[in-house]
Length: 170
Image (cartoon, rainbow, N blue to C red; front, side):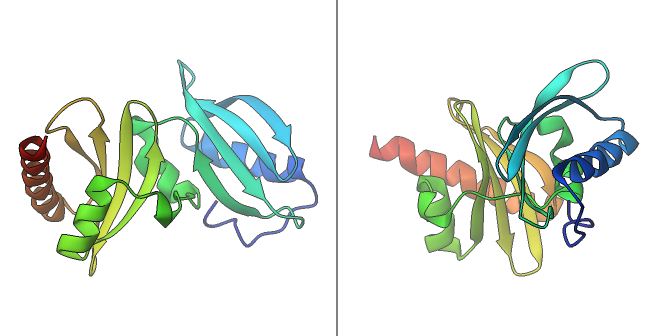
């Protein structure tokens, strides 16, 4: 977690309990925990329903180094960003849209999460940033997650142009 990332714990259980406590303050609960060497997978949700899974990585000093979203969790993306150092997909795994934004607009683009249904991007330019979700099977499906709304409007129009260009080349 961002504010506890530099904090070292005595064991993985201490780190887990701190994560659990922080999630609980935002009315989120952990449904299950699966331990692995240097990370654990947590199934997170509200008291009413399960939302998704995250993978929490830690080092030999039991410091939380990064968190990876295994499942897309649209409704709590902004909260997860505040609580965790979110692990981004490596830059060499960019797709057509990311390449288009980087080459033509000089945006800094990171893929936060990708699955069969959608891809979540973090897009930055100078002091502006946004997170957007792009549905894989629907055209014009660029939806706002968080960040600067004016910048989102600009990126949305760029995305519409990108979709038009892709349709023309097919």
